[in-house]
Image (cartoon, rainbow, N blue to C red; front, side, top):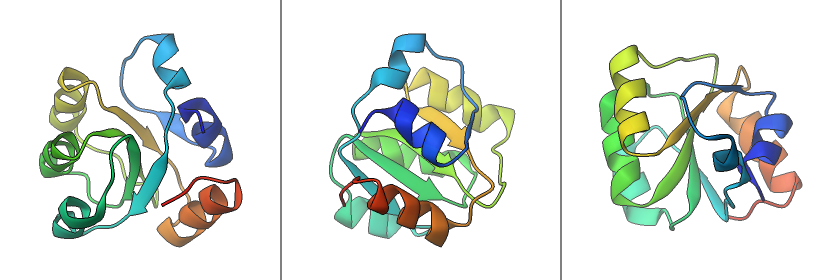
Length: 114
């Protein structure tokens, strides 16, 4: 599934600056977690992380497991330092008002695997 489809499904806002072609990225898996230890243990590459955590550690953890995008749920938005870090690591940040459970369900129903 392309990142632009995920943004549409979640009615999400793009939070990072990026090249328009970045929205064509293929996302193969998704993980919803606020525990970065679980992300490190279970996430596969080319994935999307859904989380309510908005600190720089989320970006650093995502980089370690080849996450291509992070979706902040529940209307949470990261500070400018976290956005800048993500941009430097070529990780796209999006924000949605959806709760994590609903966001994960919508993506699963649309065909995104885990």
